[in-house]
Every structure is written in structure tokens, then in C-alpha cells.
Length: 259
Image (cartoon, rainbow, N blue to C red; front, side, top):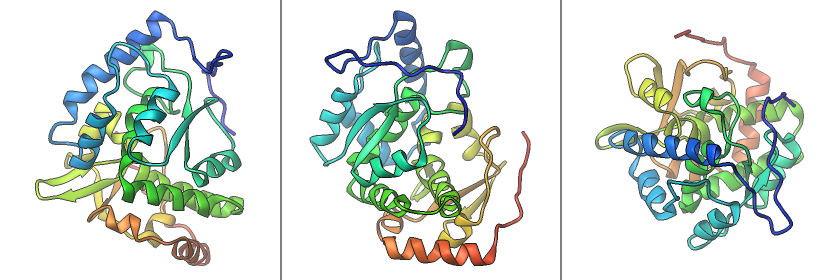
């Protein structure tokens, strides 16, 4: 696993995590500046889901609060985890319809960019779309695909997650819009993704599985889906077959455009 400079927050005996006033203010700054940035940039499904979640703006929500909101609509839940967890635990949680949420929040010095997921990214970026039946189904299928997968297979699954759940775009009547958590939770990357700077490609499962990525730059390539049907229709057997084909073909040449 990668190292992190952040320490996980430990829940008390009642499952509550105690944040400092300074940490609550970081959450408030992030949510108050990110929410307006989603207008005309995020897809309607995400916007509507975010409104249903109605996160507090002045404090960091507890995981049980977030779970209760989600479970009013779907059978998913969330659980607090250390900053970084093993692939085994990650895939098993998703396979059991539980989304792992890092318990720490970034420092004020790293408001604009953080290489590792914090609670703002996890809760604000990821959890709203768990209320969308199609997207939630895809996330569950993804988790099932990773259980028992080899390390090589998980590398390819990580690419699928990266270019959909984290940095996916979707076609709309008003142009491409963001649905990926890494986009909707980041002003800078959101603006970059919808500018004329990156390469935008139509989603192709095999190509995505063969495309490498980096976490320390804005993405040079984004994949756009036609609708969530495209993800919902991916079956477990189809994903596994595509992974096998991708392994036989090898990895594409990396295309990294530095900003």
C-alpha cells in the first residue's frame, strides 16, 4: 500500500468521530466553494443525488448520518476506514455494498489538490450516486469483479474505476458533464476536464482497461459514456472477459500531458 501523511480518525465507543473546529471549517470551505462550481459542469443525476443527501455545510457529517440518507433510497451503506486500505478489503466492502470512507480531512494547505482520498472527496464526491440504481449496480459489479482477482487483474480494474467512478464524463443534451467523484469534488480538475485541453474519448471497456494513468497531474484523457445504462449493462462475466483480452493485448502506450 502507498504511504499517507494523514492519520485516520478513530471513532469513540458510540461510533462517533470527533473533529476539531479547524477541520470542520475546512469542510465548510470545501463544500461552499464546490457546490456552486457544479452548475453546468456536473450531470443532473449527480446534482439531484447531492440535493437528496443534503450534507451539512458547517460540519463534517458522521458516517451513520450518510448511511441513513443513502438507505432511504438504496441498500448501500458507508463505513469509516483508515486513509488507505488493501485491495482485498476495498473490493470486499464494495461487493457487500459498503463504501469505504477515509475518516480524515485534508489540511488547509492542501485545499486545492490532494493525491489521496479524504472524507470530503469520499462523502461529497462518491456517496451521492450510490442512490442512483444504475450507478450503484455498476459499483457492486465492480466490487464483485475484484474479489479473488489477481494483482494483475486488479491493476486493470483500478483503471476502470479511475476512468469511470473517479473521473468519468457523461454525454448530455447540453454537452459533456461530470459524474466522477474526482471531478465533482475538485474545482481545478472539473474545469480542466471540460476545457479544450484534454483528449475526450468515447468509453470503450477494453481500451480503458489498457490505459494507464497518473495521480499527480490533471488527466490528459477522459472517457465519456452515453448514459449510466452503459455501465449498468456491464456484466461480471463481460468485465472478466475484457480483462483477459486486455492482458493478452498488453498495455497501451501511456499518454501523459503535463500541465
